Length: 543
Image (cartoon, rainbow, N blue to C red):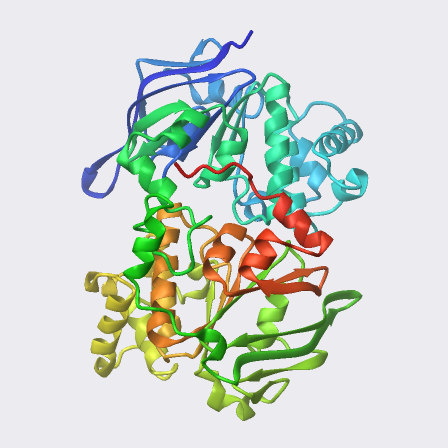
């Protein structure tokens, strides 16, 4: 018989900001976490998902009030910090999103997992190895002695799950635990989260990915601006949503939406054709030019004893998009860096519009450099933190010669308008922008030199689904209006199908299959591609 592990009635969390301004991040929400069941919590950034979860650990940093806040029968409304420490990690555990930053890079994994346990160091290490074995870590005894930078993304995430499970908690909170993982690693983590229910654990799964939530959660609550706007059994809520916001989230999912159809406007599959007609008719990209935008021939790159890329060849026709997919460590980003001239290939060559680009001296390819731009997954890390939005764009418009010249003010405004950002953001630093605003600023910066090619490396994987839809629509519109060619790198097969004309699949440094988006997604021929497709959540959650 399932029993309630957590009971919340009318929970509110308020923060006091500058000038004593009070912000109510969570407003009178009620929910129950049941042992042996999973509750999915969905919503965009700022909706209150993580604040709600952290209230079960006493870690909100704000003022918490509730009519009822019971954790395993204990009234948690008035717990002291010492009493909360007795709950954290033992009764309630959290699996965080960013394993690389959550784990100390200077300590072996076994210490990260088990140092808080009683017993000798040898006993704690044995417990850590057993915990790693329980989450299907390959060679757990070996991995236990390694630090987080020595592990792959999937291994680090499994280490976080082992860390959360080491004390056999009754409640586990998974906060965006699969973000930025490739398809196969995501499937592994989702399977492990689902197995927690079989151990009579109450699971709260927070994610902006509704397809992943659908694979694990028994019930879902949808949060917006600190409130629950809709809740219900998973299948019922996703197949027949009642609230407009839930419908908006579902409509923004790119899976099954035709090429160039705007995601931010599509509401049902039947609307796809009508929405597509609202766009400019796409050019005939296959016949638009006899010259490819990008030609890659026999690229190889080795780091020490590790072959990152081996004899990779492909081309990107002008005005089209080639999607590049594969698991973490498959060589996608190394290939992109060689195309961008940031890594020198050991063998092979790169041509842009028929002209030699790599390997070459920087002085010999300077004329082509401005025709090539890049957009990365984490724009915040790629911005100079000392610069405002205005300075970032001015620097890009002036090709790095200045960050303050007034002559670039009008072009900077035009770039902001192009990516649908308000001019009031010019004076703000990137840290003062939302994730979606930063990504659009990154696009504006990349477009400043008016490039003919954009290399996009996981540009939307960390964005909320509706913000992702806006960014993808923007990229589509720009391609239609300017004929820009894209190399689009992603682990999200729904995104790559929607955005790509051709798809190339990489594994272990090799290119194993290339074809149209339709062929690769729906008729894959290589066993590895078939495994990738099989790992995609298979429930059609579009209403």
